[in-house]
Length: 492
Image (tube, rainbow, N blue to C red; front, side, top):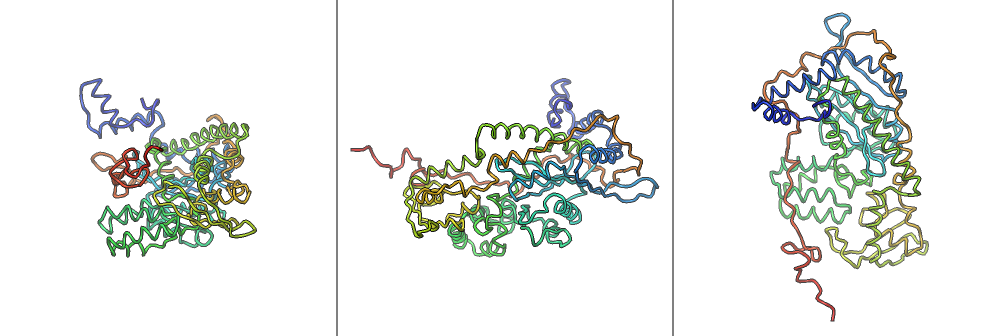
């Protein structure tokens, strides 16, 4: 069953045994049975640590350009060393990142095999909203030293470019590692916080879940005016909550004050999503886990490379994700009234005549094309022309496509997946490793009794209030647009 589906859950195994033998086994017994089956398929757990150095040599030989940083510590026995940490990044992923959005999201997730540990990931996104990991690490946990190890090699080997934005939670170890001068992040890059984790910390500090929505709206607010509106709402409800929010640097967690460095990404959901993708391999022996990242990424790049090449051959100029946003903005721009304030066609006043259905009333906005600025904030945040910019461009007979960032072009996305992963040759051709024997640390073996943890523990971050449905016409709760008293009657 595991050969066919590595993501097979322990609960499914319990149900299978119950259906077949009319007997219910314990969760621990099913978990042990799954691990024994994994050993039969992928090898012994201890032997997997010993096989790891040979696979690292194989990656260096058959996958040239792969970055590997391996740390061990001595043991009392000569010729043996303890596994400590491992960092690896594949060359196609490194080269692909240079053509993606200049953001990287980092996160950690625990391993749940026979030996404990944490898998650290750095995730990027291309111009078509597709994600892929650019670097991996296996460490002892989300400690200060572990994050220093990961962020240092990530910066040196994968993201050396300037003006890179790193998105993460407010973990003290991540903040300390980012601010460490020897890691090379501070000064030429930016570190911002995941808004979901900010909301979690807000609820823990203020003990008021109703105000959580106001704080989240402050973070998502694309303009300063919207940010101040929600700030005033918190002020009227709880001054202590406002004090807590004001103590956070605004550029770290709000879209209105980040200067567009986040590209609209307010959470670390990309890394969380990639964690779920690799969830099934986190229970494998260590060598099998590292090998799985290679084979899965090779398959992913081949698939997306074919897709992007087909789209490019069709003559499409911009990605589907970009076109979806542009079409929405185009529809709204048709109802805008534009007033020109500059004979050089740089400065405009754009007035909305219809409800934009964005949770705010219709308004008028200042647009400056040379500065790439719009009062609504979307132009700066997404690096795409908003409806007001498109209306101003149409008024001045200027192509709005000039204001679409190159990362959204199909040609750029095609370059992201241009380099394929090399094929690893037959095992009989692998080089032989003749160094020290790598062993797992005894204190990393799982000995705790009870049910092993597999799924992330839910916290305040996962609590969501029920959505309040409002009328699509007047935005007042309690009725829908069909029953709206403000709806116009039949024409006379």
